[in-house]
Length: 293
Image (tube, rainbow, N blue to C red; front, side, top):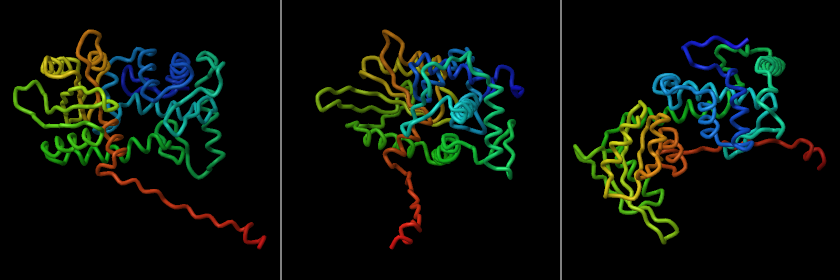
């Protein structure tokens, strides 16, 4: 049986198994986590007020996204999904349909498999913190949250300088921080060049807070951009509502690209800005090799 909701309208991970399969089918059999999540939100018509429920205090993801990570984990352990090192998830068979799977059977089978792997730990359906915890969830909940907590401790000026550095490292030139009171939220400007031939003037806004950005904030920012840039870039350590995402790419309006807290963390990691990735050496002794000397 599926576990009860803690909040009206908040789906459980097993309730999202069929929508996840359907989402991948509609995406052509594979997709990024963001693509899959957005498609599931659409299929289940999950309202924004539910999507704004964060997982834990100041979580980098909302509760629905957290549960969807568990959904993918169960489907993968059951053999219906796999994922690449690049973070692309895919159906293992082209003839899988959402109606052909049984969520209760999947949950039961995966739990039985886990019990066989370890008898010392209980694989609790209500709250699991076992060794079966996926690398994806550990990554989101550990280093990204720690990084965001660190960003909240630095001064606003330091955060603006960090954003400026990130844009420069990403290929922007003439990046200036120009934030002024009453300037519609514009914090800076820069130029991005493509293949050394084309260039676009970009105005950016960076918001360091834990909430969600709304469509009205996107519209206000766009209003401040008029006649001043080719594109806009809205950076937030929080997240964007679905309506805000739609507003940013609305037809006939100046385009605005969005960077949320999770992507901001990923870019800092990719550019090695304040983040050091350590690779642990695993040394194995080949006893057979020695025995054949």
